[in-house]
Image (cartoon, rainbow, N blue to C red; front, side):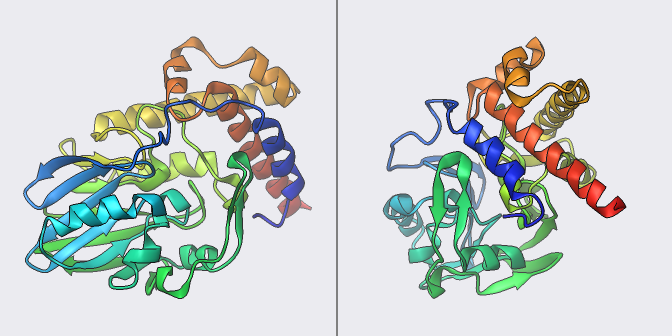
Length: 307
């Protein structure tokens, strides 16, 4: 939780907890939908964050590990490959991407950004979802951490984990698979829906935009883009997501300059062109609240630096 302005975040999220999220997100299911992307690569959709599986001569590697309750189903898929799981890469600390660490980390090495280790090793809260995360056991914590980037050579692939600062959280990484031309975006990308940005752990809506711009410079038109949530994607759809972020952030900022309070902004709503994005994870009112919280903290941070 940011130490500068916790009251701003608390007030915003207390308002947001009364707003209903989309009903179909995180449905109660204990199985994965498996999609073959390329030889040696599978896309797994379960209850939480999307998982990317690499299988080859060196063994198995996964990006993210879903909720704990999904671990038996995940283990069943891994067992089909008759190889050992060697590595788990976590894109960030949230439980829908890391709880599987608690079982899988007993045998596999876990890799993540330094801040993921710090957050998993301490009590965390996400007030929007009334979620409290207690410190993880030692075997579920990252064994290998990095600051800016890390390169792993595995299954004849060059795999690069690149830290994207202050985007979805303060510990996000995206994972590039160079030869396969695949990138796992983690929760910097919610395909076709308004995203969650965790302002409470130093995430920033403008930071997400900046980081996505950097990714777009690194990928090709035919790159397979794996979102943290939603269907498998591509560069053009990622651009559309970024354009939505820019457009909705700008609209909320205009309303803030008109001295509208959060409730008034949510009642007014966003332009009609963005309504389709509210049919997924978060509805429009929640997304307006997240933008408002992030821009408010950013403004207060700038004022504090000036003073």
